[in-house]
Amino acid sequence: MTDRVRTVELGQFEDERAEVVAQRLEDVGIVWWSKTSGRLARTLFAGDWGTRIFVDRSRLEEAQRIAAEALEG
Image (cartoon, rainbow, N blue to C red; front, top):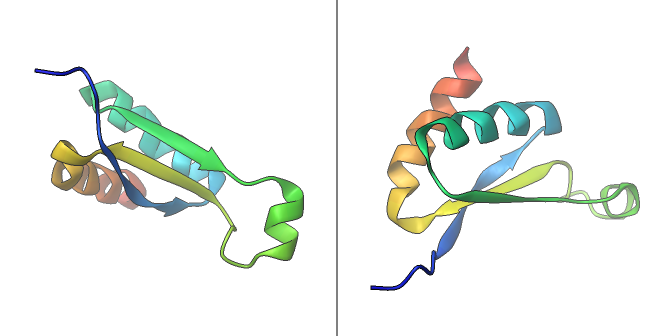
């Protein structure tokens, strides 16, 4: 068995909401990382408006549920 984790994009979120989602993922032990574009990229590229969160591919469905619940509340 390997310690390597393969990630997949969970989604792109407003920065404040990304922090909430990330905390919930952390709380349940889902491996995640994020990519936040800088001001210049956000100005030049309409598609880079927020923070993209990537999660362990093997726990994607759980992460999607957690993200949806986090954004409801």
